[in-house]
Length: 118
Image (cartoon, rainbow, N blue to C red):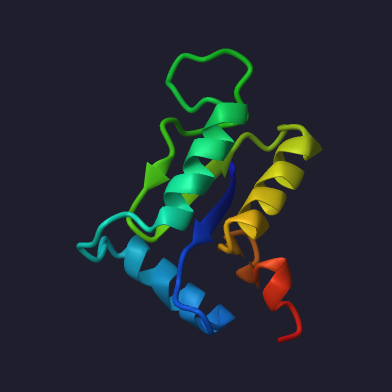
């Protein structure tokens, strides 16, 4: 069993419900044809620089590698025993790249820090 998160590059003003709708479309296999969002590309480069997602890499936090990437999101399937620092880094990098973070375990959506309360 893995601990699953995803980060989403949606339009400014997107709501948690918009994220949940996008997650449902992804799970149904519907991915919009589009160029990768620069925010997603930047996040992917940063997280995989810290935690490579190549198959066969020892001591990786990823339960599934390589990470599932699409133009507007990245799925992060983590080993349930991964270090807390990995989760903190994901949260920090999602905020730095202005991505919304979706927690698949309970459906929670966390907006980037600069959008909290706004």
